[in-house]
Length: 542
Picture: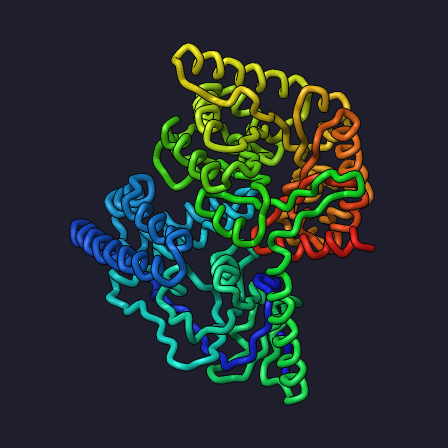
């Protein structure tokens, strides 16, 4: 037996047989004698085939995993029509006199580099989508079949990586787990595994080098370990773990409608973080009582122009309507610096983590900010909306943002457009300075929401995406905890509520500390809600 270790991406246990998905090797292209028109023709033919394949995959995925999870293929189709992406490939073929495949590889590498440099982990993982689209185009140029056939029950798929196209074509009824060499907790494999409720381990580095087809494998999606050719006693041990895990999942469902409160009857809200309207469904399925963070920047991505006021209004309205008057905190645009939009000209920056982004950009480019605020105000009629400003570092920024919000209210009143005049307005506390002056800011806002991901990296001067110093990234560091408690205490001093929408909110190891600080709202990924609710219930029941 030998063991491979990686990142636990989806909880659960699996005992089955390995099926390796091999990578297709693309041979180096000869660019010495290239017929440009012929290469452009190959490209256009492949684009048409690729689009038809993706449309078919979308329809298949809608049936198997639902429209929300199938939407990835709609975004892939968008890439095929993207003038920035496809136009650059065509330009490269003409100007550099190279093959279509060489051009696709070159342009893709450029786009991937941009996405992988982004601060937001979700956006970094989207680089895999660009790779997936480009590989599909190349395979169709080379007439390589794209199917990955799974014929046996109890299959654990082991691969270097798994793209949306890969998983869409798989027979999900035969798969019991995933193991990949690369990827993170927000990679497609991780997201798909959690959606299918299958155990998964990603980022093992070299799992594909140590396994072969039909090896017996145990996948421990909780510890992030896979055991190859395990002895019988270990298999028996994991059979028992599987049984207990299933029983625990059933017990968790009984907590779905449980309401939690502190001793003074102040309610504790268990909320979900979302990136698009369809994400609401999972939050509700897992007993989420609110949306603690709607990351609106995803409405601006994967398109060639700013979303209009009406487009944004419809998205916000959809979320508020689905939540049926439950609280919904919508964060205003957090873009800029390392999160570039192709249609928004931005300065190149030496340090985008500390740069021109979020509220700093919105207070400068007020036409972008006002379009979003008007859409939010109009949507406020359809539910319990709260607006949150990100990247706040001073009271002056709060006052300027609220002033622009008041301008939008006046504009809508003059246009005889209705909105809720009693919307709560708060800030995201993710910069140490805002935590340190929380008492000064609290009288001017209705709530705080602590973003521990950035608060930790800014407090400890640790780039959370840098593997060389990742061991220094610790949200339970005494300095970070001191800032968290300072923020919660300042909110309560002025009768305001305080939530948390960073990863720490769903961390079982941190929940007891946060309950002792009397945090009002815990917002996290939907799949973590019931486990967090159980943990809080046990703490309160002591």
